[in-house]
Image (cartoon, rainbow over all chains, first blue to last red; front, side, top):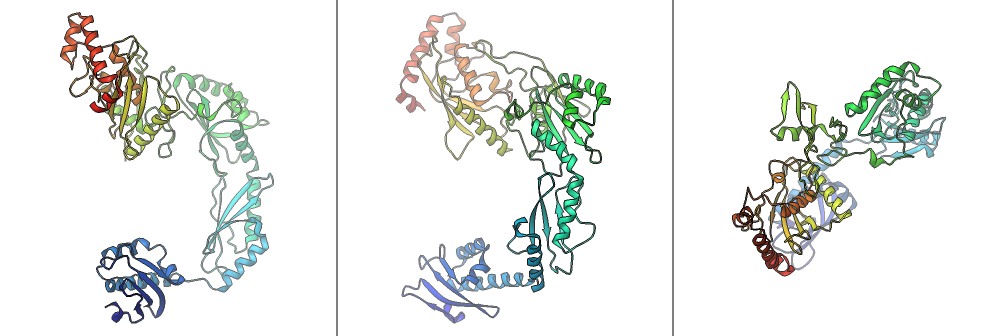
Amino acid sequence: MATQIFPLLILADVDGLSYKGFITVKGQELHFEIQLESSKSLTNAKLHGSPELKRLLFGHEKALKQRLEQCSSLTEFFVDLKDLLESIMTKEKRERIPDESYYSKLLTELDGIGWDKLESLDPLLKFLTLTLNDSSGRKHKISISLPFSYPQKPLTVQADLPSFTSNIPNPTTSFNEVISFYLKEFEKFQEIWSMLDDIDANTWVLEPDKPRRGDISRRIALGNHCSLYVKLDELNPKRICDYTLFGAENFIAPLKVNLSKNFNNWNLSFTVRQNLEKILEINFPSPKTSSASDFNVACGICYSYRLDDVIPDQTCSNTKCGQPYHQVCLYEWLRAIPSTTQIFNRLRGDCPYYNYTYNKRQLILKKWINMTIKKFIRE
Amino acid sequence: MVDSVARRLLKELKDYQNEPNPDLTELSPISDENILIWNAVLRGETDTPYEGGHWSLRIEVPKTYPIHPPKIKFLTKICHPNISFKTGEICLDILKTAWSPAWTLQSACMAIRLLLSNPEPTSPLNCDAANLLRCGDFMGYESLVKMYTQLHAMNQQDNEESS
């Protein structure tokens, strides 16, 4: 019987359905109760216990349930439970707790910078984020992780900045030093951020989805399934260092001409967006004049805009169609139809929408459109 | 892949629910668990012998949809040269070789509805109906279709029994 191996457990009712008592694990006595549903099986038995036992078993509910289902007798289950608790305790032993100076230093530091700057703090007090305001009122988040032997070892700090710096050049243990360093850093990027904010506020940005402060590139919607990718120059924020036009050739060809014709007229007294509009001789569709659904044109095959975080980047070359597709989706389709031809690493086939238009009398209206995509090789 | 199929089908379902189609009185998956099997109800076109009829369709969507076409068949008996009277199988190019991802379940059903008034007697699945058309007996054809429409597709109860 169970009580012979576990002398601290006693039967708590006449039917033999519940036990109460203590289970001894590594010299620690843990209070615990078990209530069975029937004398035949252990499935769905209810376990109660001291807060310490609950804490130890937290996150191991699945293993417990499995053991209850597998064990044929209570004794067997108690032995299993003891084993489980032992293994949990041994694992826990390895996770040492920092000494007292760690916590007192952390508290003094937080008092020093003001608790209003604290954005979040993990329950183990090892990782925290701060919110800082720069001179233009932009909010920034800084993540700090504290080493185990803090304050003997310096902090690891990360912030969202255009030029990625994971560590402060001079290792420090002081929160105040971290803050003053980053406030200085933020000032360096004021100009580039105001350029980016101007783009974000006045155009439809397709990529990145939710721009972070560190992102210095944007993909701007131009309408007609076309878009312009620009990357700002970190050292010279009023200039761009990289650009690409996406979309049907017929639409972007005149824009390319304008770009090469007017590029010398780039005027540094205007913002990047104003310059781009002047040079391309267009106005970007803005949130004031259009709605997002006009540009978030979904892939014609999977009907979604983002597929594994990729946006449709292939378009039908016919201006009347211009239907966008994900490369993966289009590849699947072109591979499936026999009329597709392959020339070196290019697939050439019919746009899925070319013969689609149907009306009452005529089922299929033939429009011969060819489209090409680079062959997409998976893995 | 299955995940993207489900996303597209949900979008199609939403589009249909947002803009109900009077000629397609029903279009929805038969159960919440399986989004790959749908049920649709077609209304016969007015001024055709199919006027007043309602036909149930069963749609089986492959896991490779929309690269490959859905399998659609009639559950309610229908008399048409390109539809098997026995099995409800449909002979329509867009459901086979002429399929393209541009079609949706809804537009495919509408194409089937269009096929009802535009039969192709040269590739028949129902030889009796096709023969009437081929020898030019339009009166005979129309009255045959009308009879079967009245017999199977007019009454909601009959409709359910045959499905």
